[in-house]
Image (cartoon, rainbow, N blue to C red; front, side):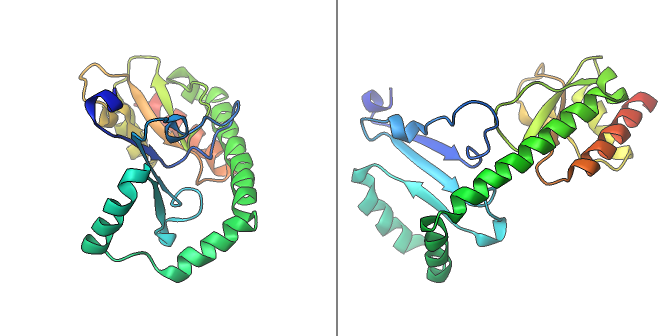
Length: 202
């Protein structure tokens, strides 16, 4: 379609490194034989936001126009940070860091899923199997609206986002988005119990 329409597809890849099941999926840009995919990425999730480095993989015909645009509209990121990151990656440290992070996040996801299933939160929410990511949807199984789940969680001092925030449809799925990557397993267990109590108490 992109080739026929003389258009480009923007592929925004910010957390594909964190896949917990199966083999990693290839980037769409890797499968592109016609130079129609622009791949955007960042190190915010895989390293840390303060690094403020990202990347773009362009079809050959767009490299020079992009360089001119960058020179005109913004300053490049600090060269020292770029050089240090390049050395970090060339030495294999980035790949090892991602592997270790993936193991940690997979364990945290398992802890969250088991904690929800093992407490009163399981009366209200169901967590599907997800193959990748840094957060997971928890679907309402008793008809509570996303807004109500968010409200009850907020009263218990828990930050969750109702799924209504991610859908334009009025009849989208009900539930909440739960983050797990930034929290140690013990905190996830305690949070799951608090969420269960908050949902049960209304």
